[in-house]
Image (tube, rainbow over all chains, first blue to last red; front, top):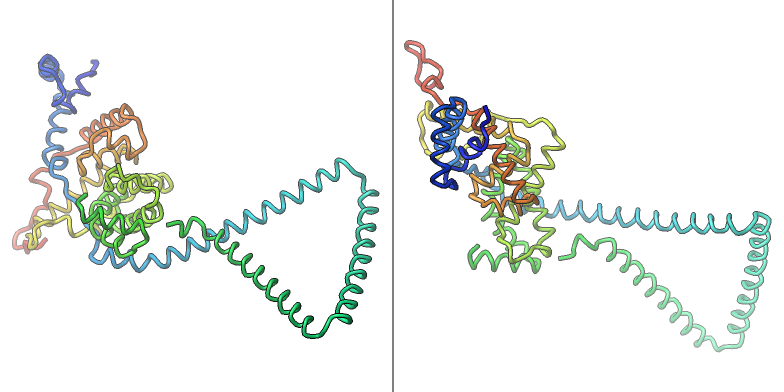
Length: 179
Length: 196
């Protein structure tokens, strides 16, 4: 026997029109299966669903929440830092691999070796020129000026390192402390 | 949500952890109840409820204040529990660990305790028969009196999907339901203590 739409109507008696209610009653009078389903559903609603019991957690739930907050934050911070680090490594690797692929496609190994030797030779020459320039400056300039320039350079370098470290730290924690 | 709770929420959004603790205090019971009904185990429900508050805490700046806070919070809990159930695949039911708060009477008789535990166990067994999304729909409908629209929004479903899930779940529950009978209590032998 086809139980639709009566089966559906059994569970939504309040939304039925008068005609639908009569049709349902007529079906229930002849269909034992639907009549049993309706009886069980009414009992279930009365016994349980119309007066559902709300269970509560063990006392101290909020205290446990507060205690776990610091630990959760720390865990999330570590995870975020790792995620940032992995993204950084992956991005760097990808850039190097892309560059290597481009080089492989556009140049030959002989050209790489030639370029590498040329770069080394140029670097050594540049380093020697810079060294002689510094020594000339040190011999010509007064000692007090050398000290001031040295301190200024040292400070500038330290500030740059600090800014860089702060930027990395800040970026790594984005998302954890975004509130 | 009353004015005080709105104020706590504003303070929490601006980083006040104490205000968020007050929100936890206020909503712990509905969140825990949903997790317990979904997972059927008090310890897992505790963990899930704590995780729900942590997720809400992290996502507070994304909370749409036009939406009721309780609906948003319960939606997080429902999604988390559905995920947990999918990972676990087999629902568990720790009948011996039913939360004590299910018994409203402070000094109930042992028979009453037994019957209440049996009744709660039966509810959990019935709920455990349903798929996690169907179970969530039934719990939100009957324990929280959510409308079909609210259930749809909470579970990220269409209204017609909610209707069909509710119908399927109701039919499953009705077919599986066995009305409690007078034989629910084990028969007491002659001269045996009434304390079971």
